[in-house]
Amino acid sequence: GAVVSQHPSRVICKSGTSVKIECRSLDFQATTMFWYRQFPKQSLMLMATSNEGSKATYEQGVEKDKFLINHASLTLSTLTVTSAHPEDSSFYICSARGVPGYEQYFGPGTRLTVT
Amino acid sequence: EDQVTQSPEALRLQEGESSSLNCSYTVSGLRGLFWYRQDPGKGPEFLFTLYSAGEEKEKERLKATLTKKESFLHITAPKPEDSATYLCAVSRGQNFVFGPGTRLSVLP
Image (spheres, rainbow over the protein chains, first blue to last red):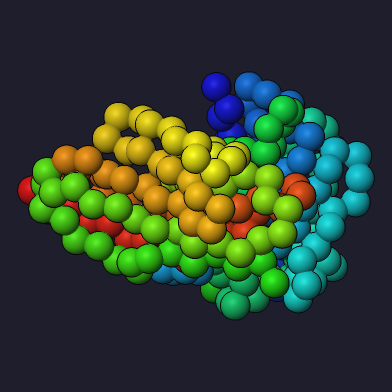
């Protein structure tokens, strides 16, 4: 149980284009979903938290107009990187939390490369 | 300020050589301490949740313990497949604060 999927697993895009990443909880309803970014050999950095049907809460320093998050249902959240630049290249990981409990279950991650 | 540190940063063990990883935290209103395992290029895999001092959880060769200021992840007779980065996180409200992780290598 508690399986989270992400799609795509890898994406390469050109500078200036937008990329959408999907995160789905497959066998539970996720009241809250989280988006993280991870640089090589570093820990996870929380970007934003989203509750179903509400606007996402972004961490300090994360541009909300650049990283658009939509949590339209209890099983799906999307992260859109708009006008991507090479510095946006990173490993993006989503997680989901259901009820009860505070555990977060993570997706397999998406490797974004902007050329 | 909420803070989570982990030590050592990296650890190399011979197969069968038991050891412990440390996670120290300062957080107000702790709602749980979590251990995850992360393999390169993958998302973290949930291992344990600990809620109160004195609590212990076990899974195969892993055992997690919790005190008021730190948690230990004990690895008994590790195998090469236990090689990974082990992350701990504390929950304050709905968000996690992650530690930097310990990179474990188990040599055959």
